[in-house]
Length: 548
Image 1 (cartoon, rainbow, N blue to C red):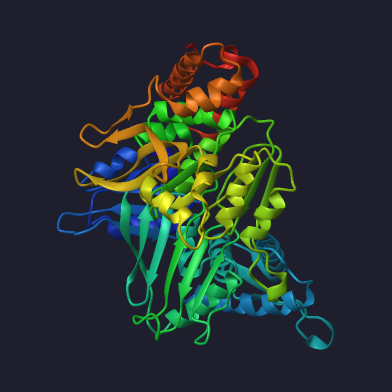
Image 2 (image 1 turned 180 degrees about the horizontal axis):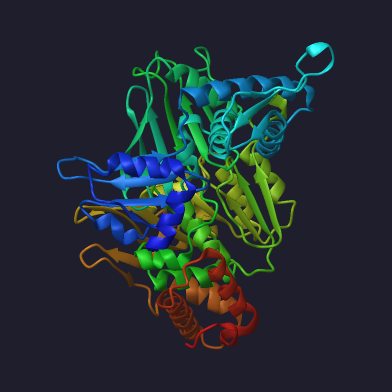
């Protein structure tokens, strides 16, 4: 993970802006360590000092010096001097002239490709500096003037144009950084981020009060939901699936425009990674593996930023590979590796009659004959359709905002969802996950896994049984329902053909060993985990790349 000296030299040589930055800080601090990947263990360092690459030519320097109150996150990106800005403006003017002649561009990739082609047409690359290459035509008029750039200038200016037109503008480095979870923008302050390793960090990007309203409006147009004084709040998604919330008007947001971006992760975190981090135990993962293989419904519940979607994505590979999966979401956050995946999104733009709500997609799911229905999140009356689906034999995985089993039941059976209490036994498992403070650290943990047994008419209550429980003292998970699990014995073993229902625990122990071996072998890549789980489905233990 730490780069060797030759790799670092090569990076510096290929990226003059990185070299320039390192020169600027050499008198303030030690030379930073370079990482190709940032290990989670670095979060325990009191004074970190490291640089890592993101996509393209952007690098991130994370450091904290003695006397600094918080860790700083410095984005190192190509920047333009005054001469380069003049050339950029000349190129932009020509780009707009050329773009008018082109057909309408619908996707960011099409626009990105157009910018590259137009740059090729407008620019000539030469090591010799100059402003314009003049080509005279008839009557001495200029015909096809080209702007001369050095290779470095070409790269810097193209980056600047792309980030301005289709990228995140000043937020572009964060869009390229795979370690960012949330971006928090408040006018008149430095942008803050939630980093996957270092948690909340302050960046070197400052949002100026005079410029913030313009930036807010421009960014809202990129998510297809323009803001104004009359429409001060906007929600939308970026092309990569990241969620964006903008509050524009100063009447509503007193400091000026604010923005929150929840980053979309291209590659999900694997279940083995969650086990290694301690989010869940191998036992909980093995239990969920059995539940999802045998068509049980699981609700992943917790408060905001507790990691519900991360856990959901991590356990989806436990569904057998031949199953048809139907997902319905407001924003695309659920990741499904299965070949038969029907991925549906709501639509809230355009005329009201053309809107498609989550409840419409869930109604359609019942007619699509899926093996599993996965709404990214349920909040309101669409939960009625979810329970209708479970009642008709369609297992469901979804996330829900609630901090305990009692609150889950109260919210589902209360207004406005109003699920009849006897219907609650269509749900099998409720997993409660939270972000908790333990010994000065913010960690995510599965607090409990609860089994729903059914409705007790005599006491008018939903009966549940705790299968797993987190012990905060030693940070371990206890299998309370070992040899006493209602779901494993009554809902799985009974219907799966086990002669003795207690044999299900032998299968549980085997799955647990498989997961523990994967963690021991360092198999953390999401797709590698998918491959091993599915090989086990097809070939049993003979399909595993290690011995048990």
